[in-house]
Image (cartoon, rainbow, N blue to C red; front, side, top):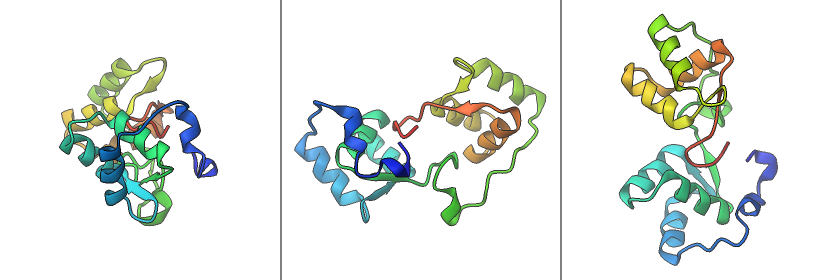
Length: 142
């Protein structure tokens, strides 16, 4: 969801309930109605939940997700703009192999970054060069 959807994130999850313990945990972690991507993933790991479960909870609580680790949103604040980057052939082939419906999932982007010992934003830069969309987000933001 985009910033234009602020205050209406929960609409994606009609008829969903949020466990009180999860609600309290997220409300404690959020600052000014926002939670960073890295903090959301850390919560998922600590509480043995999937990133999607944390993302759904954020939506239900109308908490805005910030600071995408791939640099796909919220980059105008503290981050440099992603500059397209020409990939090495081995990385280009691995990216093409990882595509699903012409898109690269956030999870696959993270996996490739680790495999090639790159920063996650470097994968985004290569995808920009190759005109590959990264979707879906592990947290459900895009």
